[in-house]
Image (cartoon, rainbow, N blue to C red):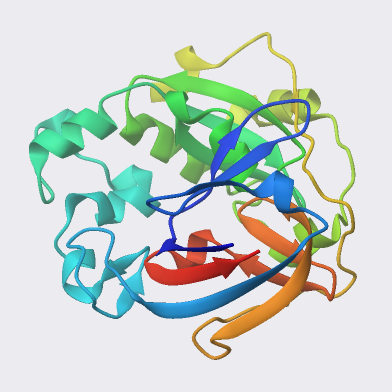
Length: 263
């Protein structure tokens, strides 16, 4: 069977073993069912996730003009501390920014390759942790807007990492840590504006990924440089497809590429 569509990040279902789904426009693939099967990935063209035009992807699935114009690629997306909707200040589209920024946000600790701090909308828990390949995570604070989450993250990342080492995550080179102890240790560094939102009593969430074999030396597939690749799928973790020959493919970082998948 051959399926074709524009890549968007895989949808996930939190189950005993995470279920992954790839929306290929006219087809909906459960990637778990393809594990231990040989599949071929081929680059076809580009399709901007915003304007839908066949234009080279610049960042985050958008062509260059859309990246600098669409409200869902504003700087506050990657840097929540730059959010200004709570001040009634527009960046690109105030109505959109209010809708996204003025809702409950979580500052969390996740352990994927190491303990890191991050921010996500409450409705994105645990999806955000799954996308990062975290095998355990815990909420620290729940605040009413993105700005408060952002300044809390900025304060805490002075004392804990804010990045994931994707190679370590994919090699499963991880150690279990006590995130409750980490949460308590970081409590004193939460900014005054957010201290009242500290979550006193909660436990770790544990996540189990569908991986049958972890790569010892993961090598990233670039479909632009290598327009066709065939391999045996042996697992999915984070937003990565993992193949038997230790090739890995990050679906999220290739959003906006139109590909065909042959099973």
